[in-house]
Image (cartoon, rainbow, N blue to C red):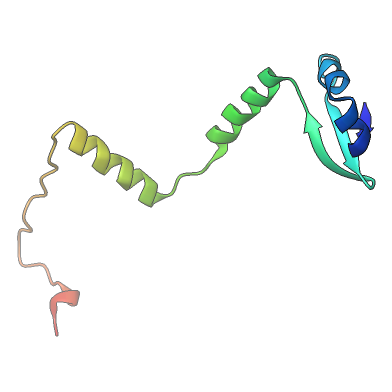
Length: 91
């Protein structure tokens, strides 16, 4: 059901009761300003939204660094071997 903002404020208990059958949309001057839904679908939406967040490579390294610190793990990198040309080392 659609409600005008003033009406929804005055009849809030009715609005809350009505969410059992369908989301309640609240309008202010013909513009949708709120939607009241049951808690379970909203919690499902929040869980889905969290899964949709794309993490960056930086986030992955931060997580890896944190896991290594928690496990007291040190990732050792072997020394360079051979006489490969290193262009950035020249000045």
